[in-house]
Image 1 (cartoon, rainbow, N blue to C red):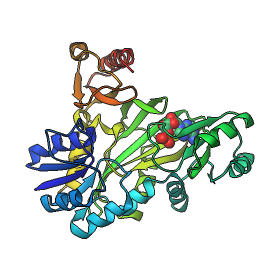
Image 2: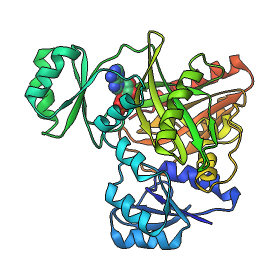
Image 3: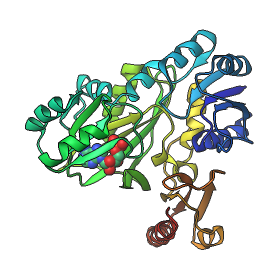
Image 4: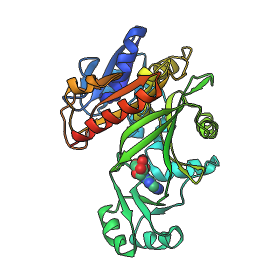
Length: 363
Ligand code: AMP
């Protein structure tokens, strides 16, 4: 069996690494020359919406999946005419537009921050009267890792914030003073069989994920599972999915979902019985899903913009390093490492050392 992936970055790389033991092969479409999965998959070099490449991908593979959600809807539709795709085009269409996504949460009775659509400075001024400060203005589309977002502290910020959006359809949200950011990851088969991973607790800086820790027996597990189950059922979802939530005064508010494997689930490679990558492949191939049970304590630290020396990473007890074969650039995720151990004290001390080492090498 051969799996096609739109996008050839680190998520495609880790999907391929999970798929080889299962006897799977891979092909990717990616416009760049240093995408992380090159070398692990047949590389169709070019744009994601290049029709001849899409035809070739459909011909070469048994099923096509994605490693990122900003695939034009036309691409998903074209692929669906020629091959099997998972997750469905509707999941992509919702996840790639923040306003549609927030309305989708709302329709499913999943709590979110207060929000309003903004298509002009006037809209922003009106919306802020109800939402109040602090607030965040976000472009509806193509925003990730904090890109296309401006924090609004007071009325003096409105004009420059709106100008920075360059007239793109936007959304303004109340800034929530969250106590925690968490995410829940699940995998679902076509027959509805679903498995949930233990919650991840996530630390961000400048909009980019830095550290994710697996939370065993978290009091919010059940509530988060219920919200994600609603989303998966509504979409008749197939594959791995992640839902990011804020915890505010004990309440969970949905921020966004990703119809794919997710950075906050990288700890599952060593820290769960079956990784999110393997379960994504099992789900889209309609194979039995693997156990999501946590193996002791685990946490992941991202390497952003630069790599700590491997010898120093591996000198930290119980570390597993994953490099993405990408050229370091400021703000670019170029690798991660996971600590996994049965010893809670060793876990905390190793995670602290790893976090410090990663921070020293951030660019
Ligand atoms: P996003 O691209 O929506 O995931 O935002 C990136 C990061 O910005 C989040 O992980 C939060 O740390 C922060 N953030 C985004 N929206 C809000 C909000 N409404 N209130 C507080 N923090 C937020």
